[in-house]
Length: 394
Image (cartoon, rainbow, N blue to C red; front, side, top):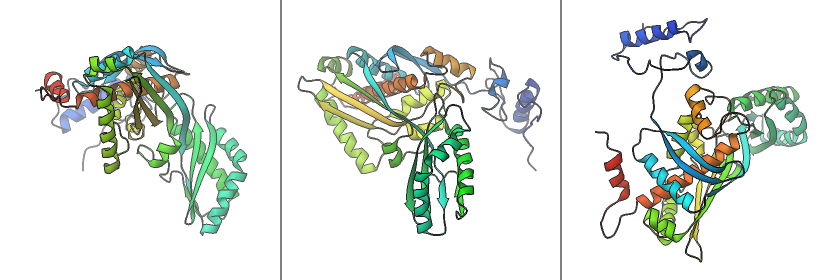
């Protein structure tokens, strides 16, 4: 019988039980713990964030910036903490930020806020299911009141419903303040579903999540309806700024983006960008976000056009940007410090962080899109050369 990981039902975050787990690891595995067991915070701060804690994973954090943002919630220059083990990445984002500064900043716009839980309701036949969809619309106000009774922050704004066979697939759409809101919406929707069950005795059963919220996955429904925050970041780049910093013309960037869009179409990719997940994951890891939400958050569309004055208009819309400045891992000591670097910790800061994140994505896209081009004269490629010079860990 395999030995059990030590636990303490009274206090599973005490120094004694953490040492017991460290000793357990060194006894039952080949590891000798030196670095993972070193940390500077109170382990009790981890309660609610992790179980069976024995130490920490120390991921390097670098600083990029300043990023010049012309937003409605984020306005001015921001230094952005990014946690990553990929060499060259911060250097690339810094280059993109220089392009943004010299172009007058990236303009950001939040156009949607929504977090879902998506129960599916099962009936005897299609007719009962259809009638239930009508009933949902007629009784929306009562359902909204029941759901919102569980939270002081969350607001139920819509119940989408779609009929297939003997089932009604729904998306309970909430605004969730400065929290990401998955747990908040789960509880609110569960209570609402239990109330619905009492009103609908003909219902056979329901699943609290029928997978139509497409949590931690890209999807067409999230592209159109959104999940988290929908943010657009756009910029107009003068030709001389692009030539000086990216060593390419607006025409070349436009041409390359057209080919990338065709490739995304052929491969059924979730976006036609180069690497939005890179910057977002580094920001998420530094600031205590649920890193698995990259599954939705990296989904985006890129649009660009050539202007008559020779400049390039470049825009990215992220329809499912899931992040928080309150709750979850954002209050942990190191993550809180990273949020404070951008003045994005606590209540009232989530939309500000969302706009910074969208601007960060633009910086990374501009730089990498230019770096992948092969210079006709030198036959060199910045992408390869940068990894050789800065990314070598041999």
